[in-house]
Amino acid sequence: MKNRAKTDGARKWTAREVALNILAGIEQEGAYSNLELNKSLQQARLSTADAGLVTELVYGTTARRNTLDYFLNFFVQKGTARLQPWVRSLLRMSVYQIVYLDRIPDHAVVSEAVNLAKRRGHQGISGMVNGVLRSMLREPEKLRLPHNLPAAERIALEHSHPEWLVKRWIAQYGEETAEAICRANNEPPAVSVRVNTTMISREKLLEEMKAAGLDAVSSEVSPYGIIVHSGGNMALTSWYRDGLLSVQDESSMLVAEAVAPAPDMLVLDCCAAPGGKTAHMGEIMKDRGRIIANDLHPHKKNLIREQADRLGLECIEVVTGDASALPDCYPAASFDRILLDAPCSGFGVIRRKPDLRWSKSPEDVEAIASLQAGLLDRVSGLLKPGGLLVYSTCTIEPAENEGQIERFLKEHPDFRRVEEQDAVWGGAAAELSERGALQILPQHFHSDGFYIARLQRCDN
Image (cartoon, rainbow, N blue to C red; front, side):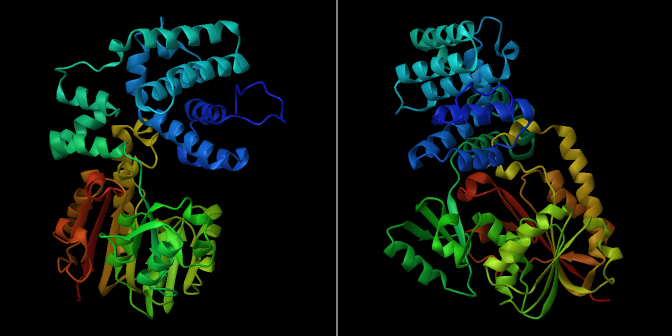
């Protein structure tokens, strides 16, 4: 990564150095925040407390970017846009601590920022950083947002989202709901796990977790889910290694439930990586039958395979290729169930990927909707009459969700909505189901935003 600190390789890096390196990578090289964070934490081998601080600084600074820049532009003479990217990242990270983190003394924030600037740059930069931050502390009245702004501008600034996206959500959902979405996107995501019911019941695993001192409760959204309020990285536990659980968001668990695969069925998962929903379907099928798990990217094949092996599932066959080419590989009307967990804008998972809000454009939504339509049209012919096709996304964008289903049904009269939902979504999510589909917004259950639609191919 460019412009990293001038440091002796043997010296242990501080939490803020690691955070700055990650933020600079996001800023300069377009790195994904979650991937860069995971990689850097593995390499740095920090204490649990320092790793937590790095996570807070990276996600918080990234999420609050335009609010931080708004404050900084009162104090940076030529504006933040003209700063070197790593200097801009350092100042943003420092202001985030001053404005949003009460537990870190302001003088410690300034001191550490100046030290980082000295190690990474030169005397002039460290002097500028020192001056900007100390001026902020002397003039706290400038660290307040203005009143009486138009709704979209106020929400975008207060909750730090692109104004074009806020305007879009206001038009789609109304001002109150749009603000609730933005507010929820800045909350830390819950830790939830899916129980592998081929090995253990949810009740039994919950008992084991509580006996081990974890603060864990049953999910109200999915009968397979457990919310873990404290317990660290669940992927490092023996329960995970032994295949008793998988780390998965509650909303995502509802997808396999919607597919409702039964033992001995032939199931197609069109865009399967990393394999969480594939494995869940295998568990629901009691590992009896066959699931064809396809993904476009060959390097992701092992991710799906590793999931299946860890969970003791033998019914999953992994293949790679463009999902639109699947009709060339399998006979028409041959699958009992099809899951198209489609590529999407990802607006439902912004709290997990805070940089995503800054990397998308309205044109991206249009392009992805066109791709989704093509995939849905192509793979639908592989479904048997009477079979179920589930279309899902991790976005809240109507053009990619309900709009996609309405278009498809107009053009494919041999399909209908499956509106008999009670046996499928019996938890808290059931009240959101409408016309054979479910739209979960991030604020509904403090889980990911998700869309799930169930379609049936009519018998001839």
